Length: 186
Image (cartoon, rainbow, N blue to C red; front, side):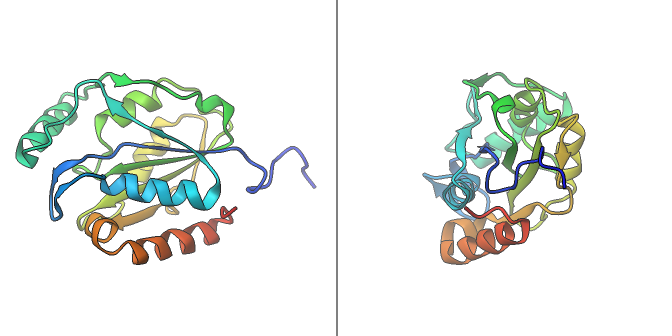
């Protein structure tokens, strides 16, 4: 038996996420982002610490179309927008990474965060919000970016943003079932 590996209940966990507030597709103007809602549920259920990735230059809140134009330009240029603050990922065993699925990619500020850290020996678990595209292969992109991590591709959680906003009881059940399946509830 390998006693060097911590059990999921003994491991130190972190939920890292990016979430957009303001005008959003399919849910209107929101004060709390779709991904934030799911991130809070995961942190509460696992006892994880939580860190929000915040771009230094925020996305427009009053126009979803302006927001996606900026985000699309960042994606096309492979930008790495500066972010505010940081958390020492290296102090954690398990890191949940959450984001909205934008054109089959995490927002570029998520890559900014990822590339600032050493992922060797970490377990990375992606979760997303979306409006119909599901995981959309973003888990494989996270796995490629988190070099040295054991990324649970194919085991991430995808929750529709409209469900996160308008049916939180259903979203909570999805989070709990998912975490139970991973053996990650506290």
